[in-house]
Amino acid sequence: MVLALEGIVKHLTTSKESDPMETKPKSKTLINRKKLHAMIPLAERTIYNMEQRGEFPRRIALTSRNVAWDLAEVEEWIDACKASGPAPRPGIGA
Image 1 (cartoon, one colour):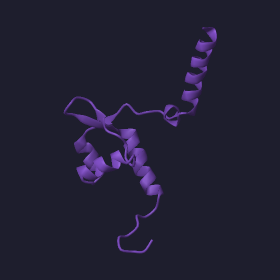
Image 2 (cartoon, helix red, strand yellow; image 1 turned 30 degrees about the vertical axis):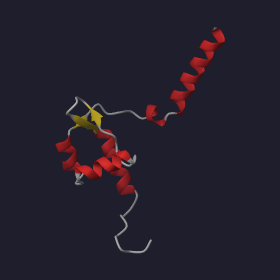
Image 3 (cartoon, one colour; image 1 turned 180 degrees about the vertical axis):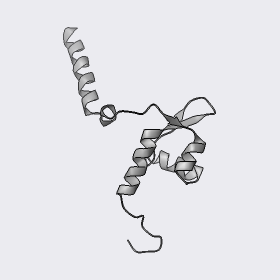
């Protein structure tokens, strides 16, 4: 019994140490769809598709009809886009 508990404690402590999401502080500010679109001028469907591919922060369901995004995650995504350099132009060879 004691060995089983020690194994569980070890698993829980190593899982938290290896999870990068646990180390960075999360903001407590959520933004609604209107504020997101003011920051990110992309179509709703484009944002949804990027979320599904893991390329954009996931929305948080507040109610069955209301969603929001974590402001810090959206700002990190914007910073990553800026750091990645200019976007490739369509029609130009890769």
